[in-house]
Amino acid sequence: MRKLILLSLVGTICFMFIGVGGILAQTESPRHSWELGTEMSSIKYKEPGLMEEKGTMYGIVGSYDYRGEFFKLQRCMLKAETKFAWGQVDYDGALQDGTPYTMDGIDDYLWELRGLGGYDFSVFTASTLTPYIGIGYRYLNDDSSSDLNGYERESNYIYSPIGVEIITPLKNNWSVGAMLEYDIFWWGKQISHASDYLTGLNDPENTQDKGYGIRSSVKFQKKGEKYNFVIEPYVRYWNIKQSDDADLTLNGTKIGYIWEPKNNSTEVGVKLAVKF
Image 1: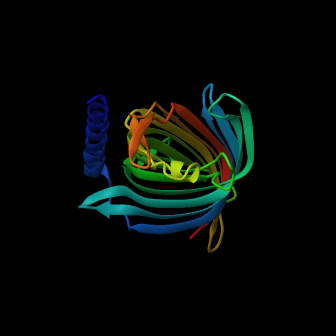
Image 2: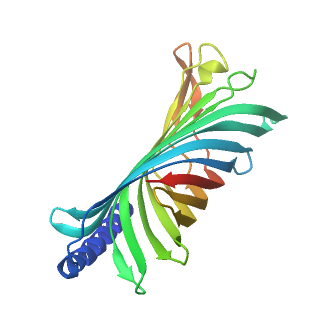
């Protein structure tokens, strides 16, 4: 209920601004742009007091951006973003009996898809301020099944980004921008392939409904004759509470239950892209 109230309030404020801005805005030609690039980041996943994983991820990113009229309202922003990243992380934790244990070179890959909608405001004469809201899906696969004590884990998040972006033109065809975003966490599912660890175990699925995300970035853009070039350092953070319990069975007989502990992850990286 608290999340629904927050989302409704932000949505109402945004549409009030859009309504006022739409009355004052002048008609502009629609603008379409595509962005394609690569990312490199350092990522750390931590279950406080239990374990942590850290490593380097490499990614491919793309987006489509529309600016213009939407349902007879001027200066709207509609955007679709996608990301695919892969890499390896190292595990530092313990076995079930408490014995310290490490694993190196665990294969990870991440896929994310986001849809955003917002409105462009002109501020400080030349700058553009864009509040936005949207929906996102994030999938992370962490596969340590090649290790005797490891197994594959799948993480699914559905969330709503609420943020604001500002961009200001500089001299010599350069511009600088910044983005700050809060992610409302709606739902998560963690699938633990325990059968990788011991044949006969089931693969429990734990649901999550409490947590949040934060992300921010600074963007530098150079305008060229045909293409624009983008450099964007960023930070992305997730904090997720403990999941619901799920049954753990062996050959169909319940032997206990399992849960996903509270956890947080921090990703610090940089994006290099071409915009056209």
